[in-house]
Length: 193
Image 1: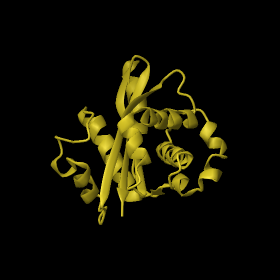
Image 2: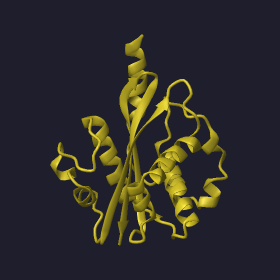
Image 3: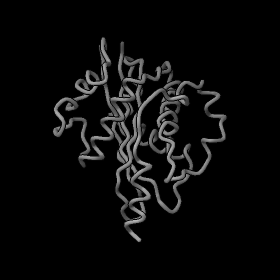
Image 4: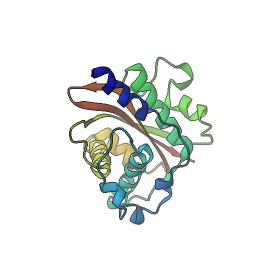
């Protein structure tokens, strides 16, 4: 039975990056959508919805604190996804990747995804989980991630920085189920161009 469960959960965690239609929505329209409140189906995860939800909630928080909104940047999003994927697959949690040389630092990842001409780069990383029995809804998961960044001084400073104008978000779920939870890594990458 355990083998069947593991096979069931391996395939949904594979993701590819492309243009995120949810991130392109105006924030006000995004938060009116019923799909945010739909229960998370772990066999059919909507990665783009999670990434866009964190993007929009991050901008909402920035605006509450008198900051301008950040633009969603696909190259930064891909860099964020790659870092989350590397952390998940190589079992580390750090801004620096000692396993893959061309993805070692945030600057390396920016170069790898062709994010050029920047003056500033910054990064937030998060390791979290979803409960198998009660995974909750997409809004609650996105809010959990953003509130975790807000509660940490360094992450909050990155989130509210004045010298950034672009953001990319990337999530990757581990192929690991432990004690009734599925774990994931989430990365926010910030830039100024």
